[in-house]
Structure formats: structure tokens, C-alpha cells
Length: 62
Image: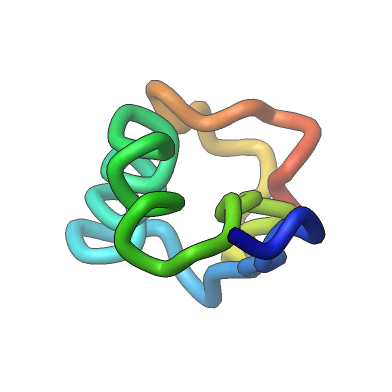
């Protein structure tokens, strides 16, 4: 397994983007096993950064 994480940023956090973020965080171990490297969510670009998004670290929102 690769030790360096695969860094991922999302463009948008609507229905699809929020579900991708949720899966990436709740199933991180399974994804790492399938991909062969840990997966790290490093950012989420959105239109309205001030909007509260449940389950996503506000520090990742830009």
C-alpha cells in the first residue's frame, strides 16, 4: 500500500458532493484498501461558504 495519501478536493457540495464527502469520511478504511492508498479530503469549493453544511469540517470549505 502506498503511504502518501491521495488528496481529493470537491467542486460543489450539493446532493452529490455532500454524499461523496460523507462516503469519503465514513468509509475511509474501505476506500484505502480498495485504492491502495489512504484518501484525504482536503477542500470543498462552494458558492456560499457561509452556509452550514452538516458533516463537513468548515475548515475545508472555500
